[in-house]
Length: 88
Image (cartoon, rainbow, N blue to C red; front, side, top):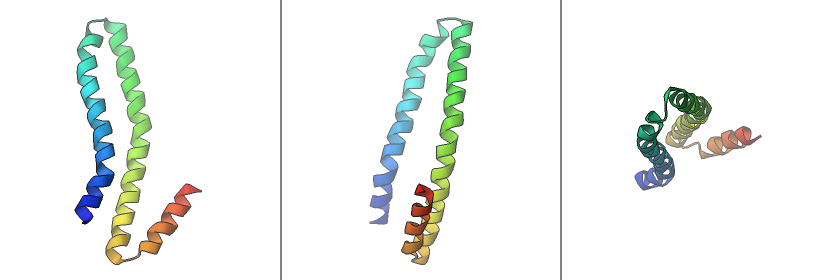
């Protein structure tokens, strides 16, 4: 049951990452054919995207670890309190 619940929450993230990586693989050859300045601009755009998404990745990883530890100890109310504090 816990594995099914984990997959339920993991699938949207997996789908987003899969689309990003697949689209990069499709777009990269097109960008490479445009020239050096376009390649540099595309690389900068990807770096900016990575810098923005790393914040959300780190935050979700921290919340996930906290939630797993609380769940394992049976302290479900602590998870709720933590999520309420994060939403403020």
